[in-house]
Length: 186
Image (cartoon, rainbow, N blue to C red; front, side, top):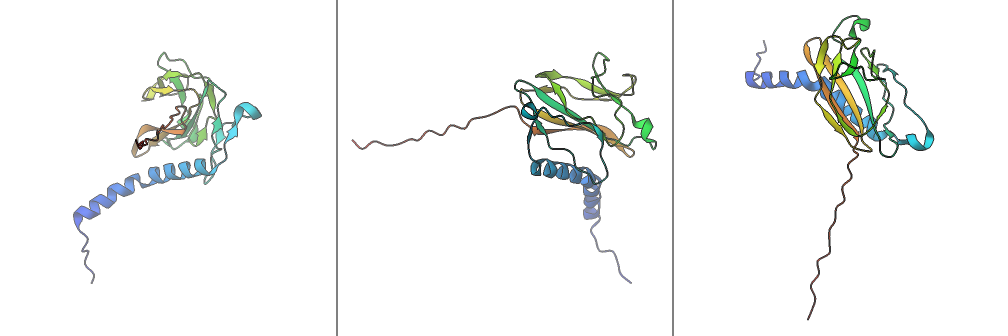
């Protein structure tokens, strides 16, 4: 007869790791698929990434490059908070209860495609269709020119609804200046 010799504290810690393993694995796979994809110049090719359902095991299109002075945002609905897909429909709305055009009627496992926005501060919420009941108040975020963001709506079932913002491309550019310091021989 074998006896369980595992330390109870270790067993508890492994449970907490398991609870976050799937969301962390998804984010890792999302980052890897984004990093391995090629950048497509939306301004030069006049292309857009359409919205639609994400197939199981499928990959997301690579992020686009926004037109000069603009930013891009897409939303992925990954929150199965109802057993019927049709009942998971949500709208992204402003704080003034106005639906954000292009970010309405999203259901579980659906992505919006990229939405072109002007730089600025955005404060949105996730609501039932028609900007009815607020199901998640999103933290305000700032878009810089050239920024590309993916907003993930996650949770549901046994997890609380929450959001994750993935920066696909930062609009902030930094320059590293390393002057050469020399010594003169006089």
